[in-house]
Image (cartoon, rainbow, N blue to C red; front, top):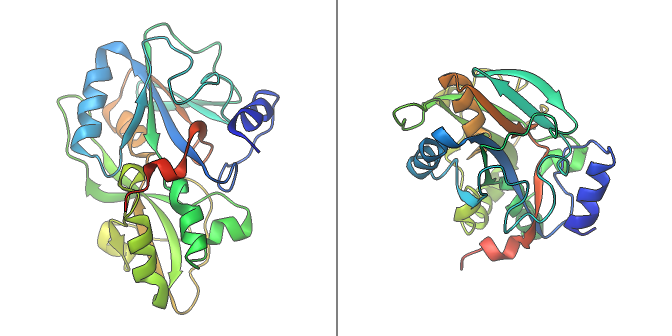
Length: 254
């Protein structure tokens, strides 16, 4: 399936987490904020680049970008609308909510290197189960700006102990889509109390002989929107990504 075909299905009403969709094509997190705080978001992303790698930015009010040639208001499989830092609606489209002053940011997604993990023999549990990836707020604070602050959000994938080094090495070749894990092992060390209760997405089992690996997650800007009480913002429903017109391999470094 091409990105255009996937976007057409989402526009027509199909709703699904996008892990495993359009294999080989890059997926991204969406966060759109009013123009007066767009620079703050860009600065926040620069200071927290592992969690918020900016792949593309649109003009104020734009519904597409150079790397996403669909309609950002309709062509993702799920949206979340924020007012004063609170999520007030999950929506199938945001045509009625989109504003002329919104600046859309597309932030890198760890789904981009999952094909490479599979090719290297590293299993990806949420793909096996057909569920959303589990994501957690941590106790690790992001480096703040004047108006934006919040916790680092991570995604988790359990990896057999003997493949941990492989998973680190493979994902590390994709620095613009989060790169190598930010934490390996004990979830309590980063303030995650219960792996069975993710803040976003679906839980997956960590089996005997497996180690939980945690990658910085592009939902981090949405956590900052909530923590900072931003007046208005639109994001993707976590795990329901923007499928872009660029290939995963374009973000791989040797």
